[in-house]
Length: 354
Image (tube, rainbow, N blue to C red; front, side):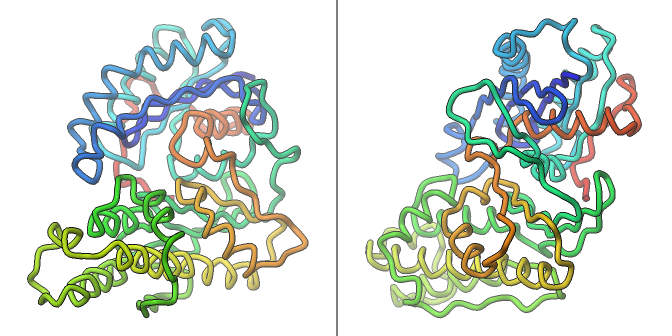
């Protein structure tokens, strides 16, 4: 079974073909990140226009790279939520149209769930990918950490899961972006904060860790604490604009603030992951989402969970949004008899939850 996956929930236009839910045949990503960098975050209108320009060329590139024609494709999987409405609409309309034209079954995919399924890819003919040899076992603890989502999920089987907890405000990736903007660092914030943190002292400043429900997160208070810290460091009051902070902060201050923030933000995730592992004793732990690429997250998790089972991470190229994760989940959706979507009526769900 070969499934074409289409992903357009934010600023990446992506398509991939996956065989039998485990073999990656192609993975094409066109990002509009450079267009958003000057604004310090994604501008929805710019993202949507970029998807319009890129969607059909990216899909054709995915077919070409996999040496497939439409006759070789057994179905189309598309992200219909969660994400930016305009961005989702481009991918869904393209998938609906192609499903009708080529008479292919259509599968609607939850973007957040898709991040977990990047861990089910075990082989590829593409160069430069590091793939595991076996798929995760159930019960499985899934930790999703990205720009829009922070969740802990217990999977008993495919499509049988319980959402244990999630962020009650900002996602961790969003918090990284906002702190990076305060410090005058480049977008996206995760890599730039991590780079600055290498030169800083992670214990230089004491920052708060939110006390939420058992498995829930909060990052808005931490973000505000960083803002107040930056204002205090330059001797200004709370009404001093955040956009002017980086001009007054020294490089040493920026490095120490980045390191202190990163440590606490990651600890917030790791504390909950450790608690969930101790309670549910899963056979697998898998991480998904852009923040899964964080070396600090990997370091802290490995120290907090010295386990007899490995903590599974996707290849670095599969941590951020991609079509491969959507195609992989699409394979399981098709093979396990989950309902098909109607190509004439499938709508987007920007606020979709797991």
